[in-house]
Amino acid sequence: MSDTLLLDPTGTSHSQFDQLSWYNLEKNREAFIRSDDYLIDGGATPLCVDTVELEAMSQGLSLARDRLEGLGQQVLAVHQDLFFRYLTELDFLNQSLAAGNEGAAEKISRLMAAWAQFENDYYPVQYDRCGARRLASDTGELSLALARATGTYELTEDQVNKMMRIYLEQSAFSLLAKKISGSLEFPETFTVGGKTYFAKDLNDIQKAAIFLSWWQAKQGEDIFGSSHSVTLHSQDGDVSIPVDGFEDSPELNEAFAKYISRLSPEESKKIQDQIFGYAKIADQDEPWLGRLARFTGLQATVFAALFLPRGGKIFEDILRGPGPDWYRLFSDSQAQSRAEKDQKFAKTVTAKSVGTTRAKRLEERQLGLDPSGDCIANGDGTMTRNLPHELGDTFRYANTQDPQEGGAFEIQQWETASGKKGARVILRGTETWDAGSEQVQDMLTNTESVAGLQTGVEKAVAEALEQLGVSADTPVELVGHSQAGIVASNLAADSGFTKRFNVQTVITAGSPVANAPIPEKIKTLNLENIYDHVPKLDGAINPPSPNHITVYKDYKKGLNPEEVHNRDAVYAEMMDELQSFHYAEVDNFLECRDKVMGFDEEIVKATTQRFEIERNYG
Image (cartoon, rainbow, N blue to C red):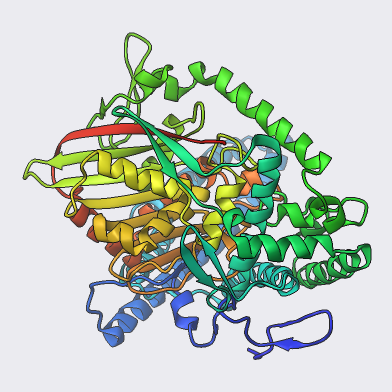
């Protein structure tokens, strides 16, 4: 593999992209070539494997499979030869019978009976439990299961190259972010809420996300008014939580305002050409990616506001002046969408599970203990939910957490027969695509989370756990898809949060979380569909380690972001399949997770508490 990974439009070679690089694939190669359809990066297995003996076993199984497959092919060849001879003889006898040979009828009868008997004997020899082809297939599956269970399966070169496309996209995002941050004249230091940030400690993705957060907040202020807090609604009452944003930084306000005021059409065109130059690089390997970058402008990503072409003037149309008309129209459409969802809330599974009024929604509720995690319909039209255990069911549970009048999340608590307790925070992803409305699960929280800012959602989760009295020794699991996965990972990376709460596991799906420095002691499992652009927005692969696993798969292909990023149709199903394959690293993660969270014991009691959040103005 060449050290040169990409060429920028000026012809400059790049072998590294700072912290945002692809990693050195040669050094980390063995970490990736570890599965068949799934690519598993990181993780560990407690098995002590004799690799020489295991290789001999694997070779023996492969040899047995090949010989059985060869025997099956020979039997098939004999069957085909005899079938041809049978048809030839049958045709001859039929002609003889037509010519008046009366003895031909008896011969035809005996021949057909003999062939029927042969067919009855043939299929068991090939496909019954001890048939050649059945045994060949079973032996192959046994060999594959052995490799999965011991963590020794190797992908082919073609499979590796197919999976490595994810790095091209991530590098493209990194280069786009580099162009933004390089043109901003970022202040060396800036303060937000009394905390000092140093530009040298931030990578290009984080800098781009900071600028986008600042810009979105300014548009939100123009439409909704300024916001410096969120309200957490709970069964115990309402709590106002102060929240600071990048728009509150004097240094950023000065630097970014100057940047926008001096932006000329010529500069806009130059930056646009550079950006599209990088899109063309992606186009060389994956044409649809270049088209996506140019024509949809990556609308479902944190780059949406910067890369949506409007008459060839990206920055002028979007950034110049307060409250561009197009953004106000977009925000109005999102407000209408939120209102329509609120009107339909009463018909949702969530409403049947928790009620329609806020007072009812926030009541503590008992969870059933059926490990299937299914909802149970009650006779009065309501529904009772079960405490989910399996990964896919845990993510499907979010279908009963639809927001109403703002954002929402739930905290589940349980107790085992031995008295062990556990808690889980289940968050939902992005609910609206504008920024600054009462709905905090929006694009502003997306970009702030990618930038590493402590958002209102994160502060609300910490406050909710405090209200419930979750003790410092109770194991906590954080679960989230998309934006919710970023929030979960940022909470796990927050030393103040983990000092107060005993975070043990983090499970995310389709989330860009590479920049969250989660301690090694916290076990993490991250799932990414390689056709999903959202988890690549951090511009880097997730750092692998024995306790930090990322699982990649080409699960669903398409250009529609909603289809390839879908929580249920992609990631929940992906988790179901992953668990059934029993990879050593994943099984070890799940075994450790079950043990620390109490899922390996009988759970005798489980409850859930819904919390709602909304952004305040003024």
